[in-house]
Amino acid sequence: MSKPIPLFEISWDESDVSNVVQSISRGGYWAKGPFVDEFETELKSYFGINHATTVNSGTTALVAALKACGIGEGDEVIVPSFTFIATANVVKLVGAEPVFADIEDNTFGLDPESVRSKITEDTAGIIPVHVYGAPCAIHELQEIASENDLWLIEDAAEAFGATTDGELVGTIGDISALSFCQNKILPTGEGGAIITDNSALAQKASQFGNHGRVEGDYFGSVGSGEYEIVGSNYRMPDMVAAVGCAQLEKVDELIAQRQQVANRYLDGLADIDALTPHEPAAGCSHVYQLFTVLFDSKSDRMAAIDALSDAEISAKIYWDPPLHQTGVFAEGNHDGLETTESISSRVLSLPMYPSLTPNDIDRVVSVLAETFK
Image (cartoon, rainbow, N blue to C red):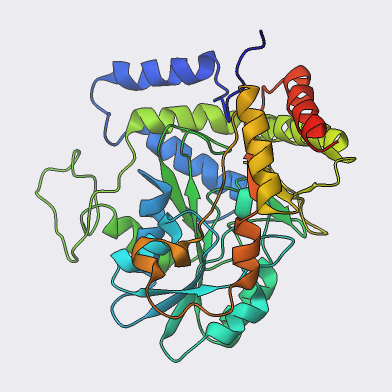
């Protein structure tokens, strides 16, 4: 009998283990240590950007970014409804209100025209999401933000290493959030980072994530320190940064392996009329944090889920229902989200990880081909 195929597996080697052992063995730098400094330095180098601050999750990275921009009570922030709930939660957490705009039917990212229609005198910022590992229409959104004097905060949690017109996503907005959760392109278990070229924003985000401390290392300074704003503890532990350093050394190879997996999927699925794979727009590269297909109908998706489940192949829906139909976000008027509702009802993510074997990919394809023959 064939073994089950999981949705994702983490790629690791002895360098990850060695770094963690080294971090722990120092015995004095578990909360703030050399690997944190190294990871932040290497992130700046990778993105070609002036500032990188590590934090304990992609969610806290977004909160710190919003706080750095001064967004809060009375403000509105335009976000997609087709995204993980953190993108909207963080707006609520800083006291502002998320306003949902529709998405494009190709990138699955924010539709610039829908964003324009949602701008009011209370709009303070836009949070575009690079969905599944492919860039959204970020340059058009950048123009809209500039024209309307709005902050552009990139949620690049799923798209580490993706490019648009030769630029890395995360380097185009005013400030950006990365995620290193266990299923992301660069995994550390949990963790995130804030990256920006804006020195003032970097200082404010870092200060907020370190209890509002003015400067200096709490653990290495004589005095108690000065705290000028209300902040929180978003610090990344040194052993988590140790894994980040090891993963960053091989991240381009891991991305290339994901793209090889995706290419085999694309070849195998090409003749199945009932589905369309999510692919990058022209001039963009896809890093395939998720490999997602769009079915012709919701019933087709259900048939695929049943067939894959019977074959012990994992699959997951990202995201249905969309946020504007969920919990606290379901209240209010959410007109103009027809594409969001259509896409969310038909997407399904298939197993995707760098070490996914050709035989396992072919097995997934075979099940889908047999289902829709």
